[in-house]
Amino acid sequence: MTAIAHIALGSNLGDRYNYLLQAIAALQQRVGRLLRQSSVYETQPVGGPAGQSPYLNAVVEMATALAPQELLQVLLAIEADLGRVRTVRDGPRTIDLDLLLVGDCVCDGPELILPHPRLHSRLFVLEPLYEIAPGARHPVLGRTIAQLRAELLGVRPYNRVPTRELTGMRALVTGSTSGIGRAIALELAAGGADVLIHGRRSRSAAEEVAAAVQRAGSRSGVVIADLRDPTACHTLIQQAWDHWGGLEILINNAGADTLTGEAASWPFERKLEELWAVDVRATLTLARELGRRMQQAGQGVVVNMGWDQAETGMEGDSGELFATTKGAIMAFTRSLALSLSPQVRVHCLAPGWIRTAWGEQASQFWQDRVRRETPLGVWGLPEDVARTARWLVSPQAGYLTGQIVRVNGGAVR
Image (cartoon, rainbow, N blue to C red; front, side, top):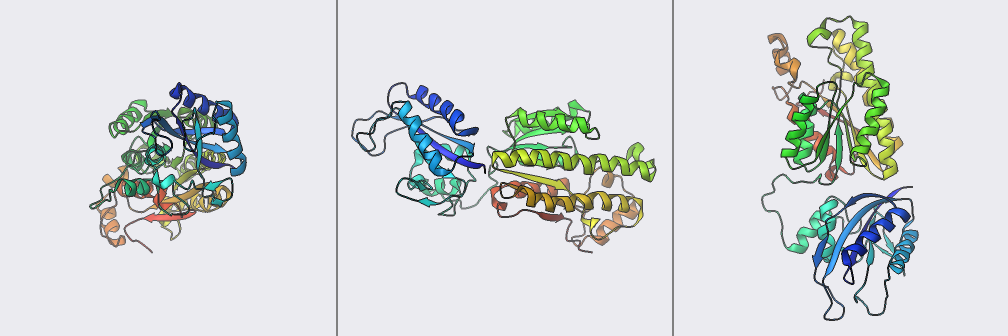
């Protein structure tokens, strides 16, 4: 079973920075895969003999298959290899490796205490940990790293504004060059996530959205793939995973448009083939393969896209087509959530009447029907779906998985 471990590093003897680099290299060789690494901070010594030199401190996040006790022994061995000598309590050292958190493990033994007993009281630990894992939760105190840091600094929000709660998370949003996908990509970036933009054919449209993500202060990139092609789906999986060395968020938003343009006049059978290839087969492939990689890495969130009327039904060819394909994804989501838990959470958004390209040009008949069937009396917007997606992938929704979340203005019939 893979777990996520947060390890603090410190050095105040000799070539301090080089000792940190050597320790990180040793951790990668002997502990597992490096997921995130904080900046290096210089801090004054806390405790110990007077006259010590300042420390360089950092925190790394790693995926490891080692049990906590095994992990502790590896850290002690790395310290010894790098010349750590224990003579004076809190004295100078070439390298100090402290095990801060291992998932939600709680341990109170003679050799190992988890979480680290002084984690919440040391700013030189909380600051780099906050940089890479602000939403990580202290399993005993029940508060996030961001909250513990704020309490230590004596800073408490009075009039809270949107935060960067997704900082350090890496996302792929399929079908993100326009509409709901574009809105989700920009909303995740506003939350601090790095976002890969996917499009089917227009690189320029994808690069425009990627530039908007970067203006929001996040990293971005572009991947182009026709999801109707199974080979292209597998290529996309590898490209997306390799781009930043992993992902924590997958939003399966891409869907075939059979309502506008040339496709609107296609026969029923051809529309079904198109929807099956993109909305069903590609979603299953991406969710299963990337979900398993996230599971092996120890964490992640997958969000698929359903339809609110898949369960209640809608007359006509489009109703039959979308109820069949989106209903399949909603059922698949529940099963995948069971397969990937507890490391990976899986959800499905089920939008209702959202004003996308079709809604913009819909006839007065449909405009009236939308208002009649929606208790809130208005069309939803792509941004309404995006804000819900941001919450679902955030630490605030950490106790939810396998949910179908309807974004539909209250329509229940």
